[in-house]
Image (cartoon, rainbow, N blue to C red):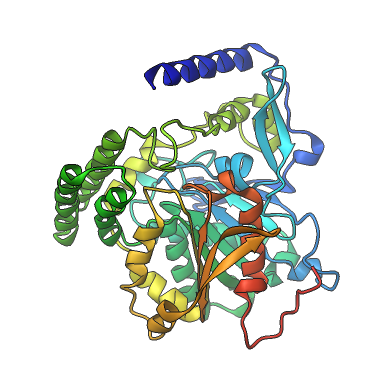
Length: 449
């Protein structure tokens, strides 16, 4: 096994050597350019700003849908401190970066892009992440309130860029730690909107969280039993892991937030070492299949930066240690109470890759069961339907009222990396209320697609 890892490392280093020594000419062709990209200031005094890249819909949802009614999907990445440009160029954007035959880089059309029939906006959030600008480290948010406040400013400034954006329904999505971002900005919007004139409100229609961290105290307590039942650890290791989980839970209950985050990290480190997995994002393999490092290579190019509206001197990091440190004490704080408010006031999609071990199906279902929601039992009693895409089982859907829960077969932590076409079908059907996501008592207006 070690020799296999050594061979993969050598191949990786060889590839990096070639892409550094080959021409750095831009591969961002005209058709691969975002419709709009640049900066959305969140503090006019200091100059701090959130970087964005927007791709207009490739086609309208139906022949009867005008651009002013075409949904806008906002995509956030987690970490904390990980750039949404990884999500863009490696997961669900219209173009995916890949090694070419001559060992350079190329962009290939993504068959599972989320902008097939929707506008798609990527935000490097919070400031200090990716290409976003934090005037000083002290201005980087240290809690979800500050994150949401900056996002609200940025979203409203984006909407102001084009008159047609004001009437378009907005859906906000994110994965992993962005489960906290999505919950927090959704909550912030719904609380702020009633205080604003109609013309200044954000037209929020729904929220989607993939393999999300939402209620860390509950979720951290699920790893031992799940891993044991999968045969990844034995009884002794299960007991050891349960002890570590208990420490994280007790520290969280006591409000020792920084220590609680460290304790959770200990849980995940023990689990990774015990299982021998390269990471916990896919328990099917001990190798890291990710080629997301290609995004870093792409965004090092001065030509690509210039074409995106980024200063060439900026150094791109896939994930920022500075942002991660700023939000260290935030990690174990729950946002479940925000989700409880959201599900009563807008539609919500929770989805997980079946093979994720870090923010797993089991961990999400564990906090769903604890929600304070008047119709929770109705959801728990709802049928779990087999979900098919192109005649093949793609996963499972459970839906009641505003809540839809999806398990995506054959996927790990980043669902769109593993199952791009199925992830695309999921987000489109959910937004358009089609198929298993349709409201039974509402006529489906989008059956012609």
